[in-house]
Image 1: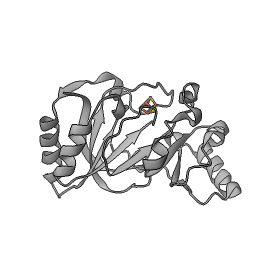
Image 2: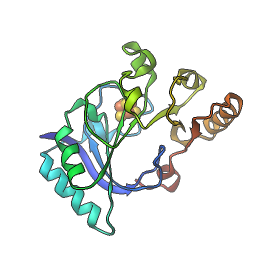
Image 3: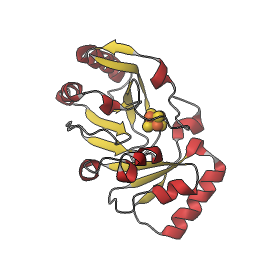
Image 4: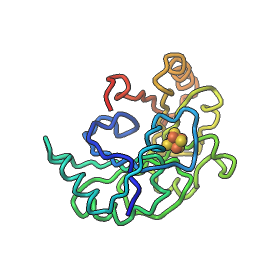
Length: 202
Ligand code: SF4
């Protein structure tokens, strides 16, 4: 059994894989409490579902209009729970399985893509805010930027694409980010606002 918050279909609105039609499985709960968290529902709505029920629900949504082949496991923080069986079953069914995590909890689970989004508050217990084992297997890192200290927090040794996401698409932060990217010249930093928030969709 897994604790799920919601399952829905949409377009990936953020990160390196922005723009792909996807089914999202949002897991319940998180081990952090970021003040800018934009998923309060993940702390409120808790549904118990087994893996087969989740796969059925994903299948219904994926086949509703067109064949969606990208599944995003998100939260909350998915790695609180062992979702290895779910990931295996999704992959057996031919889905590309992507996961979004704050990177603080390590489990070896076979997926196709991992987006690690380190948070400054995790520096209390992890250098750089994420488990270093993710550095070898993550496809991308994504940093939510609110102020200059968040830019200073970015791990410069990461070689994967590093997404810089202005908190809530705020114009003040967006301008600051543009200048920071221009000045830094770091080749793997990419500015990406959240498309779903611009469009006002889920
Ligand atoms: S890590 Fe993500 S889900 Fe958890 S509190 Fe922070 S923003 Fe919210």
